[in-house]
Amino acid sequence: MVDPGRIRALLDRLAEETANLRRLAAMSSAELLADPDRMAAVKYRFVVAIETCIDVGEHIVSSEGLRAPESFADTFAVVAEAGYLPIDVVETLQDMARFRNLLVHVYEEVDDHRVVEILHTRLDDLDGFRSEIARRVVDEEGQGD
Image (tube, rainbow, N blue to C red; front, side, top):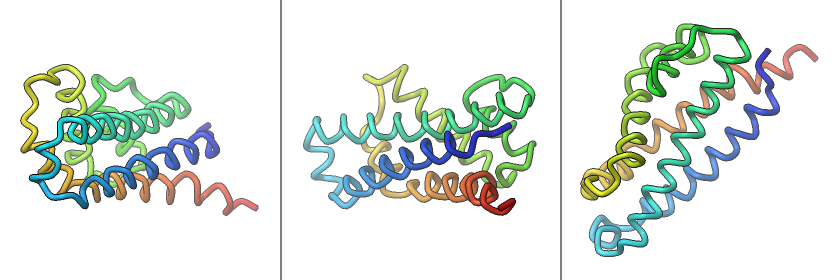
């Protein structure tokens, strides 16, 4: 059974990381690209935020005895197959998992301009994941009271 408290803690962490990413996104592309420390912060916060989404998915998979995902990206498909996410967001979340892999495994070859573009255009994807999971797991916890 999915542990709503565990999910809530992970979603709180995701909200914190997303808020930090939004703070960084308020800076211009030029400001970010000119400062290697800020770019490192953006990349790190993306890794933590995306890994938190994956952790949520892995908790659901494990708790519900769902099929084993073939990759981090596949975790989102498995979770959607079980009704925890709408199918239409799976591809976007899989792209985020692949972006995380790029940041972690090919760090030196990452195009910083692309990272800034993602920072300025894709944070709503993380918010959408958080909202969907909260609605389907955390919010439903109180409905049985």
